[in-house]
Image 1 (cartoon, rainbow, N blue to C red):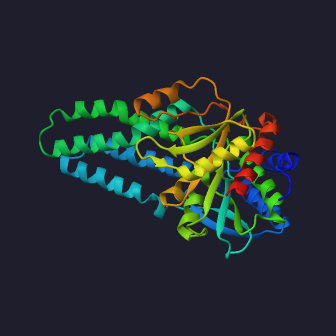
Image 2 (cartoon, helix red, strand yellow):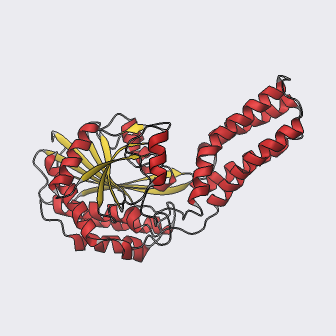
Image 3 (spheres, helix red, strand yellow):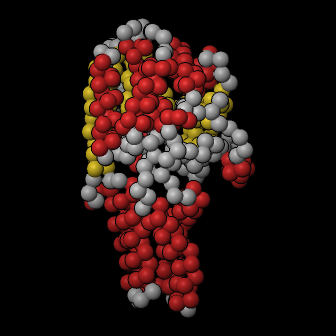
Length: 388
């Protein structure tokens, strides 16, 4: 394999985050980024294919959800008990079906490969190419995320108790529920109403840039007896949609070892994502994590484990499909009170929250990306491929 050239990688990053700019899935910026990535893969002589898919935009889904449940909740005040329970359960069923009945947009997965299908080993390097809506308030986001589902269940239980005749003073009870439930719905609507889209330099033009340069370095002479895949996935910020479509379409053989790159442009600390979630936990491959840790050490860095309690990455759908997958990321470190609280409260020793405060903001720009970090990330990925 050829040497990794960090300046080439930074040119890709600059193109994606500065010249193309915001890349909300399903928009013109998203399509421009996909076309650029495809041309870079093809320019390296890689076998390249584009797989288009449809998805419901998360902001539209959230606004519709907020409207449905707010309308249903207000209706509960005036409806008789049995009809109240029917309406609430019916709205939950409709909500669960929104992905099937709502209008959809299009995004793309760009898949490039080197080597032959007869190879004994298969390695995939992935990175998502879309960027996210700017977060209006992180505290509001956490409140809505963790309070919404419990609130639905509590309202359903109380309405059921009313039907059974074990609940008196419905107007007073409804008023108490409204103090909690209506702020959740309003908060969801506010979060989804943001019209600003992050340029996404670190998240995740940095990961795509490193992947593109690694693809160039590996294209002419890939490791012997190894089939390499390089995948720019779409709509990650919409709920890992592109990765889920990849798994559903069986675009990768099940024995493929997958390394996802997400946010590798800032901070001196290198992390191996060992798992995701708090209540529904998804643990990454310990075998692959050891290889990644050794690769980080091979690049002269110190690896640390990170349990991403509040974030999801594109490796998760592959882990759910029983494939070996993990994610490499970097961060600035520093004080992490939220992470420490989660670690103690939920017994997740390596739980962390992001230290880099510009993620999902207008300030996630190329000027904040460290060239040395791009260089180190490239070395880590090349070392990972060699070790596999």
